[in-house]
Length: 307
Image 1 (cartoon, rainbow, N blue to C red):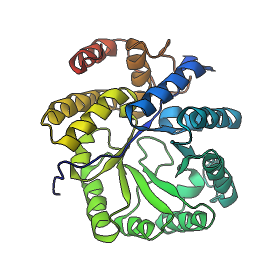
Image 2 (image 1 turned 45 degrees about the vertical axis):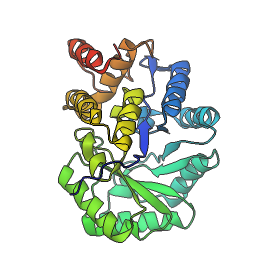
Image 3 (image 1 turned 90 degrees about the vertical axis):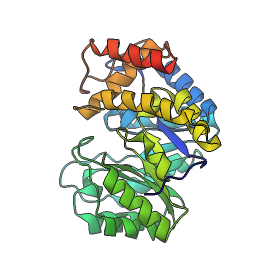
Image 4 (image 1 turned 120 degrees about the vertical axis):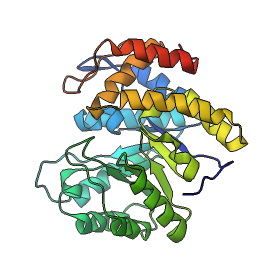
């Protein structure tokens, strides 16, 4: 793949939903984190895996949407999530309602994975997006690998090409943590539909932006300020991009190690160390990291100049 210097990067950041304890959301810290992410120049992405969307009840998901809309003026993206069980069929009406809740507040919906969407093969996955496009004018797709959720699916490249043929789908987040699969998607995008957003979700290879990817990352919730700085360095051709990117990648390699979902606890720990949240608590079902991780996180924070 060819490196594309001087490009303006589109950055979207999956917002961590802070908690005061395993059952209580820290709404005040959520508000300030959405605001600082937006002010840094990144688009906040709420109700994603980083925001525990699978664990929230409907009222809480709606409350997150309302707060994001009020803080950003509608400049946000959000997961259109449908809760279901293994073996479920694709629920078009439920997805339509979930997406409409986002668009009604000015946001851009992300078609969040579910059993019904992902559990019936690639052809059914593509057909579901085509059916949803009949009801939603603009949305983002989402390939999420099974290392993140058990109902994740990474589709074939032929199926991905079919997604590019749906004009209402303006981009898709790709979270396979596999460079080769993402490079294939970038090459196909460049050939078929250059305006399509290939949003890297590869927290282990955040330099995919050098090859033409944009991003929707959970890692950026640790340091939206530093990601925004990195992106500006790339746009201006400043070689300082590489040193900052290397340090941010060190943070990603450390915090996205198995079990991958425990990165959310790493994020809570790091944000607490930055003074941005009061507690490093996560919901009870979320995997956690050992307290010894704090020494490494502090070292990385000092290298970044944020601790």
